[in-house]
Image (cartoon, rainbow, N blue to C red; front, top):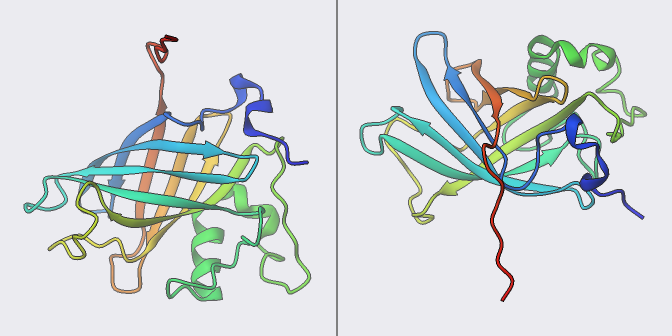
Length: 195
Protein backbone atom coordinates (compact mmCIF):
# COMPACT_ATOMS: atom_id res chain seq x y z
CA UNK A 1 0.00 0.00 0.00
CA UNK A 2 1.45 3.34 -1.01
CA UNK A 3 1.75 6.13 1.51
CA UNK A 4 -0.15 9.23 0.47
CA UNK A 5 1.41 12.67 0.38
CA UNK A 6 -1.35 13.77 2.73
CA UNK A 7 0.30 11.75 5.51
CA UNK A 8 3.26 14.13 5.49
CA UNK A 9 3.13 16.61 8.39
CA UNK A 10 1.76 19.82 6.91
CA UNK A 11 4.55 21.87 8.48
CA UNK A 12 7.12 19.86 6.52
CA UNK A 13 5.97 20.35 2.97
CA UNK A 14 4.48 22.94 0.70
CA UNK A 15 4.00 20.80 -2.40
CA UNK A 16 0.27 20.19 -2.79
CA UNK A 17 -2.42 20.70 -5.41
CA UNK A 18 -2.85 24.46 -5.70
CA UNK A 19 0.45 25.47 -4.11
CA UNK A 20 2.36 28.30 -5.79
CA UNK A 21 6.06 29.13 -5.90
CA UNK A 22 7.53 32.35 -7.27
CA UNK A 23 10.97 33.68 -8.00
CA UNK A 24 13.37 34.20 -10.88
CA UNK A 25 15.06 32.37 -13.70
CA UNK A 26 18.46 33.74 -14.69
CA UNK A 27 21.02 32.85 -17.33
CA UNK A 28 23.69 35.06 -15.78
CA UNK A 29 22.90 38.00 -18.09
CA UNK A 30 19.12 38.37 -17.87
CA UNK A 31 16.57 37.46 -15.23
CA UNK A 32 12.89 36.73 -15.65
CA UNK A 33 10.04 36.56 -13.14
CA UNK A 34 8.64 33.05 -12.79
CA UNK A 35 5.58 31.60 -11.03
CA UNK A 36 4.85 27.89 -10.75
CA UNK A 37 1.48 26.54 -9.67
CA UNK A 38 1.05 22.85 -8.96
CA UNK A 39 -2.28 21.80 -10.43
CA UNK A 40 -2.15 18.21 -9.20
CA UNK A 41 0.00 16.52 -6.56
CA UNK A 42 -0.48 12.94 -5.40
CA UNK A 43 2.59 11.40 -3.83
CA UNK A 44 0.73 8.14 -3.27
CA UNK A 45 0.89 7.47 -7.03
CA UNK A 46 3.29 9.53 -7.30
CA UNK A 47 2.19 12.13 -9.81
CA UNK A 48 2.64 15.90 -10.12
CA UNK A 49 1.95 18.48 -12.79
CA UNK A 50 1.40 22.20 -13.04
CA UNK A 51 1.73 25.49 -14.87
CA UNK A 52 5.02 27.33 -15.37
CA UNK A 53 4.68 31.06 -16.10
CA UNK A 54 7.60 33.23 -17.15
CA UNK A 55 7.35 36.97 -17.86
CA UNK A 56 9.34 39.02 -20.37
CA UNK A 57 11.08 36.12 -22.11
CA UNK A 58 9.55 36.85 -25.52
CA UNK A 59 7.88 39.80 -27.20
CA UNK A 60 5.44 37.43 -28.92
CA UNK A 61 4.09 36.24 -25.55
CA UNK A 62 5.18 38.62 -22.74
CA UNK A 63 3.52 36.24 -20.26
CA UNK A 64 4.25 32.67 -21.36
CA UNK A 65 2.58 29.78 -19.51
CA UNK A 66 3.38 26.13 -20.15
CA UNK A 67 2.02 22.90 -18.73
CA UNK A 68 4.67 20.65 -17.16
CA UNK A 69 4.73 17.22 -15.59
CA UNK A 70 7.17 15.84 -13.06
CA UNK A 71 9.42 12.83 -12.70
CA UNK A 72 10.24 12.31 -9.03
CA UNK A 73 13.64 10.69 -8.69
CA UNK A 74 13.53 7.57 -6.53
CA UNK A 75 9.94 6.64 -7.45
CA UNK A 76 8.74 4.25 -10.14
CA UNK A 77 11.44 3.89 -12.77
CA UNK A 78 12.85 7.38 -12.25
CA UNK A 79 16.51 7.35 -11.28
CA UNK A 80 19.11 10.12 -11.34
CA UNK A 81 19.93 8.99 -14.89
CA UNK A 82 17.62 10.82 -17.28
CA UNK A 83 18.06 8.57 -20.35
CA UNK A 84 15.96 10.87 -22.57
CA UNK A 85 15.64 14.44 -23.90
CA UNK A 86 19.24 14.35 -25.22
CA UNK A 87 20.68 14.06 -21.69
CA UNK A 88 23.73 11.82 -21.34
CA UNK A 89 25.30 10.42 -18.18
CA UNK A 90 27.80 13.30 -18.40
CA UNK A 91 24.93 15.79 -18.64
CA UNK A 92 23.33 14.24 -15.57
CA UNK A 93 26.63 14.25 -13.68
CA UNK A 94 27.32 17.88 -14.57
CA UNK A 95 23.88 19.07 -13.47
CA UNK A 96 23.27 16.95 -10.37
CA UNK A 97 26.82 17.11 -8.97
CA UNK A 98 27.71 20.74 -9.66
CA UNK A 99 24.28 22.30 -9.13
CA UNK A 100 22.91 20.78 -5.93
CA UNK A 101 24.77 20.56 -2.62
CA UNK A 102 22.07 18.12 -1.44
CA UNK A 103 23.21 15.66 -4.12
CA UNK A 104 26.67 15.25 -2.52
CA UNK A 105 25.96 11.83 -0.87
CA UNK A 106 25.18 10.30 -4.29
CA UNK A 107 27.84 11.89 -6.51
CA UNK A 108 30.12 8.82 -6.60
CA UNK A 109 27.41 6.17 -6.92
CA UNK A 110 24.41 7.57 -8.80
CA UNK A 111 25.57 6.25 -12.19
CA UNK A 112 26.64 2.77 -11.06
CA UNK A 113 24.54 -0.10 -12.38
CA UNK A 114 23.73 -1.48 -8.93
CA UNK A 115 22.83 1.89 -7.34
CA UNK A 116 19.19 2.15 -6.36
CA UNK A 117 17.88 5.37 -4.82
CA UNK A 118 14.44 5.38 -3.23
CA UNK A 119 12.76 8.61 -2.19
CA UNK A 120 11.40 8.42 1.35
CA UNK A 121 8.68 10.54 2.88
CA UNK A 122 11.15 11.67 5.54
CA UNK A 123 13.70 13.04 3.04
CA UNK A 124 14.53 16.70 3.41
CA UNK A 125 15.27 17.02 -0.31
CA UNK A 126 13.22 15.78 -3.22
CA UNK A 127 14.96 15.50 -6.58
CA UNK A 128 12.87 15.86 -9.72
CA UNK A 129 12.83 16.55 -13.41
CA UNK A 130 10.23 18.95 -14.80
CA UNK A 131 9.28 18.57 -18.45
CA UNK A 132 7.29 21.33 -20.13
CA UNK A 133 4.82 19.81 -22.60
CA UNK A 134 2.80 22.59 -24.24
CA UNK A 135 1.71 26.22 -24.07
CA UNK A 136 -1.39 27.04 -22.03
CA UNK A 137 -4.05 27.57 -23.26
CA UNK A 138 -2.90 27.13 -26.90
CA UNK A 139 -1.59 23.56 -26.75
CA UNK A 140 -1.22 23.51 -30.57
CA UNK A 141 1.44 26.25 -30.52
CA UNK A 142 4.64 24.29 -31.10
CA UNK A 143 7.26 27.04 -31.61
CA UNK A 144 7.72 30.43 -30.01
CA UNK A 145 10.45 32.78 -31.19
CA UNK A 146 12.93 33.32 -28.35
CA UNK A 147 11.63 30.49 -26.15
CA UNK A 148 12.11 26.76 -25.98
CA UNK A 149 10.47 24.07 -23.95
CA UNK A 150 12.17 21.18 -25.75
CA UNK A 151 14.45 20.60 -22.77
CA UNK A 152 13.73 19.98 -19.10
CA UNK A 153 14.67 21.14 -15.61
CA UNK A 154 16.79 19.31 -13.06
CA UNK A 155 15.09 20.28 -9.78
CA UNK A 156 15.71 20.00 -6.05
CA UNK A 157 12.96 20.85 -3.58
CA UNK A 158 14.09 21.70 -0.02
CA UNK A 159 11.20 20.87 2.30
CA UNK A 160 12.61 22.75 5.30
CA UNK A 161 13.16 25.98 3.36
CA UNK A 162 10.06 25.51 1.15
CA UNK A 163 12.24 26.43 -1.81
CA UNK A 164 13.02 25.06 -5.24
CA UNK A 165 16.23 25.29 -7.24
CA UNK A 166 16.29 24.11 -10.83
CA UNK A 167 18.54 24.16 -13.87
CA UNK A 168 17.20 24.06 -17.40
CA UNK A 169 18.90 21.77 -19.88
CA UNK A 170 18.58 21.56 -23.63
CA UNK A 171 21.52 20.84 -25.89
CA UNK A 172 20.92 24.02 -27.95
CA UNK A 173 20.04 26.42 -25.11
CA UNK A 174 22.12 28.60 -22.79
CA UNK A 175 23.71 26.39 -20.17
CA UNK A 176 22.98 26.85 -16.47
CA UNK A 177 19.74 28.76 -16.65
CA UNK A 178 19.08 28.81 -12.93
CA UNK A 179 15.58 28.76 -11.47
CA UNK A 180 15.07 29.87 -7.83
CA UNK A 181 11.61 29.74 -6.33
CA UNK A 182 10.07 30.16 -2.88
CA UNK A 183 6.70 28.99 -1.67
CA UNK A 184 3.97 31.64 -1.66
CA UNK A 185 2.01 31.40 1.58
CA UNK A 186 -1.74 31.22 1.11
CA UNK A 187 -3.63 34.04 2.77
CA UNK A 188 -6.96 32.25 2.45
CA UNK A 189 -8.33 28.75 2.18
CA UNK A 190 -10.34 27.26 -0.66
CA UNK A 191 -14.09 27.77 -0.32
CA UNK A 192 -16.44 24.84 -0.88
CA UNK A 193 -20.21 24.78 -0.86
CA UNK A 194 -22.29 21.67 -0.37
CA UNK A 195 -25.72 21.89 -1.96
